[in-house]
Every structure is written in structure tokens, then in C-alpha cells.
Image (cartoon, rainbow, N blue to C red; front, side):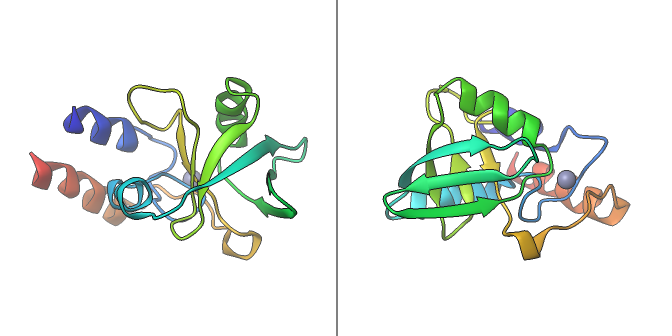
Length: 134
Ligand SMILES: [Zn+2]
């Protein structure tokens, strides 16, 4: 199960970045799900300009993901119901039995946006991480 989870997270020829707003790496996912004391229930929506907007209580946040369409698809399945782990900047869209990049996203604050990268050193690091957990 864990192996499958890992594979789903690295099978991307276009972007190998695990920075905020890109792919969720296993460490970030684990910290968000297991260690985060209180994920905040939020209403999330992807605006027409691709910005992910979160609303909870009287607060809002506007964040960025490298694939807003994927976030949009996930949120449509729950009418925008999601959980936000601000410490780890992970958005969890509930309802899936197996967490992967269809339901778990990392979001970046606007000043953290970085370009997608397929940097080979980074790819090597990610692939090595997969080997290590087997
Ligand atoms: Zn990316």
C-alpha cells in the first residue's frame, strides 16, 4: 500500500518538484495527516484565474498550486469541502480510501510560487527516497 502511494507521487515527467504548491512528498503528507493537531475544515474553491481560495470562519486564504485543474476536479467531488493543515500547507480532500495526488495537495502562498522543474538531481533524490522505503 505504501509503495503504491509513493509511486503515485513521483510519476510525473513534467514536474518533479516537491516544493510548496507542487507535489506532496511523503514526509509532508505524513506530517500533515499524522502530526497535524488540528486540520481546519475549510470550504475551498479554485477561481477562474487558478488561485485556490480557502474560507473558514471569518478567515480566507489565497494559495497557489501548479495544477489548479486537478485541485478543481477533486473539490467538485466534495462541493468544496476540504481540510487544511496550515503548518504543512497541505489541503486534504476527504472521501478517498487511498490518498494520492487526486485528493492531497500542497499549496503555496503567493510569494512562494516556483516554476515546475524536472531537475535531474531532484528526480534522483525522489527516486532514491522510494528505494529507501522498500
Ligand atoms: Zn510543479
